Length: 270
Image (cartoon, rainbow, N blue to C red; front, side):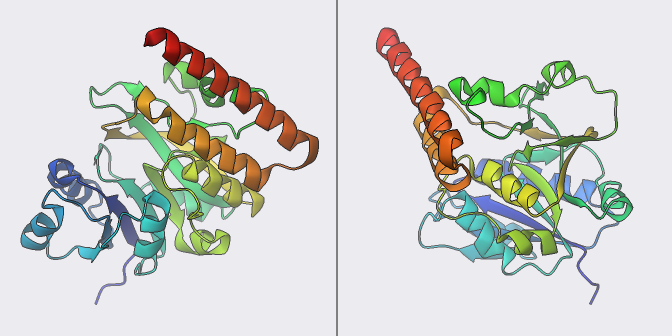
């Protein structure tokens, strides 16, 4: 049997409409790479599991009787992974470029712990896929977390790679040994901010997080303002886990002001 180089890890919840395009893009853009696909299905009600079994029997399918959330769903799948590398990938994605070149970055710099690439939305437009770690300054306004300068604002990049704080969980390529070293995703997060937390743990372990914009993928981003409470709860948990002393109090104050502003805006809108 060919050694598996890459384990593609996908958490699925009612994503049937996306799966065929995602699988086809994997087959096309992972040509020349020995890979496997492992899916944790979070108790979908849309026949996702039946579709996978019938059309993609090669996929390792883990059928959870409960919705485990994003982080725990990934952790469950990674336990079955045989690859040296992991690709943490959302189900609603389509890879746009061959990924074989990404692996040379790990060979060139063993301090790289995770790689992300350029994200496009469903209309093919640039969408921010990296950010700064939370701070008293940027928690006033969550958009400030994504301020990394004019290149990242416009989506026009001069360099082949950039060292960043965190990468969105919709696409993270990393050595399995790094994932295991940091303990994978923190399962206290159900949805949102678990990717920020994971990258913080990778940083604390001394590894770089690298963004490589010459490679891209489409992500049918499903975020809207109705999910703001989940995001804010995620940052509350992040502060609890990663901040101490006066910094912790300042971050809680900043996030508290953010919550009040959002509540006032919602009341005005209603």
